[in-house]
Structure formats: structure tokens, C-alpha cells
Image 1: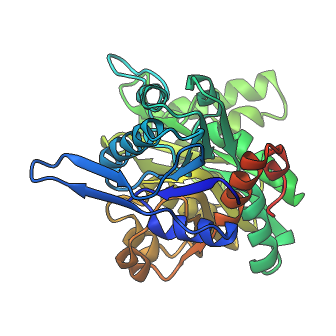
Image 2: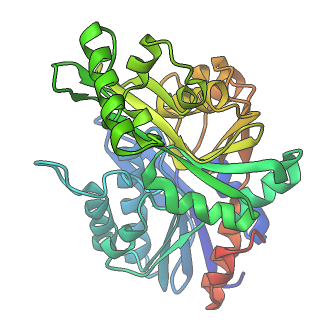
Length: 389
């Protein structure tokens, strides 16, 4: 591309090289260094006067340094008289902090404001945690989707993918899941998580309207509730879910209903129940979300789908593979997870790749390169919302 310079930050040099190669434009020379007091300095080694500048800088494990380095590069390009400056952030830093909780900051909006103050003209990113975040920016933003590339990978690499179902691990991801399911023409399902609440007898209720069993008083209460229901309604189906645990103590055969509920422990020690809304029996499950950071909710969902709901295989699929802490080791050790699939928007160290044989990384550089080309030529990028190439 003529009159174009592509700069790469230090967060994800491998992805920047792939994008540069697909565009046929070499990366411009830049030098980034840290002083003894940890301050960052960036020098652009070529003239960018009147050029269309694209700066590729994703989030990484050094998130704060990546943000400051990007702002410095944007300002350096602005002072260097660049015609237009576009920041390409495959993974937008602090995207999970997009709403206020208590006395906190909407940090994603703060980062958007920092980029505007630094002098950016345009922003290209991928799969924002919440699409409403596009309203945070004072400059035009293109939010690309990894869905077409993920859908293509599924159709090319998953045997019998037609016998699959796309599942969301929580209700908040329902829209994302239905979009992928529509693209693949598959059914979808979701997992509902219900935190424990205190029951009328001081016992925890792990599921709405279901007192937790374990003593004679609770069992007697369940018997009374069932008797009253039989008098009011002959079928009595709805109130059969009044107490799964109590009815088990009474010796009732409720294997089908037990398959719908699992009790898991939260990070704070509280018990919660997870319930599948949908059917996955003997099917391949694509457990999908935009980010996989801590993996425990994914593992709880996978165990529930395989052990309680009869799923054949579970593929965990996410756009951004943050994989903090010991996530890769836990996924490798979990028998319910068949494969972990992420894109390369977020840099994953080689050590983590070697620790997880189930890990598969999809290259997203083609989509980013095409978005850069179309932006430079003044073409629409909406084609990329539904096509992988």
C-alpha cells in the first residue's frame, strides 16, 4: 500500500508480523526502550510526514505498559505530522471494566479518552466485551467480529459438526451464542447460574423455590407441598421441582431432573446451582464466550454438560485467550473438555502452549489486514462482519 506506514508495539510482535506479511508492507522501524526508572521511550525510525499510519498494539499480560506505549507512539506520530493515525487493538485493554460497580471507575471509557487525547484519528478493535462500548470513543471505531473465522474453523476442523449445539455459559452471552448458532445453522442453549439464598428454615436454597433437603422437617414440608398440589392440580408437574434434594431423600426416582442441575462453589465459598436450558444429549457442544480469563466457570459448565446432560464432546471457544494463572493446566487436566480454541488476538506465551495439548489457536491476522486495507482505501469494512476473507 502506498503512503502507508505500519508500526508495531511490543505487546504482540508475532501478530504484527503476520498482518504486515499479508498486506505486503514491511513494518516501519521503531525503537522502544525503558529507562532505569521504568519510564518508556519510543522512537520512530522513518519519516511519517503525510503518511497513513497504523499502529498495531494489543493488550497483553503487561497491560498498563502497553497502554502507555501506545499513547506515546500515537503522540509521536502526531508530532511527526502523520496524515492519519489508526490504532489497531485486537484486544482492547480494560474492556471488562465497562460499567460502574460501587465506587469504581469505568476504566474502558478512561482508556478510550486517553487514546483520543494522545491524538488517534481512528480505532480498529475486535469483539469488544460489550458492544455499547463503542459509545465511549470520541473517534470513529470499527468493532470487528471473530465469528466468521471461528465458524469457518468449526466447519473445516470439527468432524460431524452438524450434530452440534452452541452453548453460552451464562445468560449474558446469549446474543453472542445465537449469532454463531445462526451462522452455523445449529441449535443453541444456555446455562443459568443461580446463587444460593437463605431458605425459610435457615437452610440455603441452591435453586429458586427448592428448599435444600437433608432432614426430616424438610422432607415433611416437601410431602405436604406435593399433597396440596395434587388436590389443586391433577398432574402436579410444576411442583415436582419443589425440592430435588428432599424428594431424593424420600426415595423418588428423579434421574432426569437431577441431570438438569449441578451445585458448584463460587470463589467466595458460596454455593450456586447451574442449570442447562436446552438439549445437548449425545451432541457436540461449542461452549462459547468472547474472553476466557479465569477458567473455572467454563470447567463447571463443561462438567455439567458432559456428566449431567450427556454431551458427547465439549469445545471451549473464545476470541481472546487471556488464560490467567493456571488456567491452561486446569483445562488440560479437565476430562470434560475436549479442546480449547482461541484466536491470536491476545499473545499466549510458548510455555503455556506447551502445557496444554488441547489448545488450538486460530489466526485472525487476515481479518485485521483486510480491515487495514479497506480503511486505507476508504472502503466499507462491513463485509468483514459476515465473511472470513
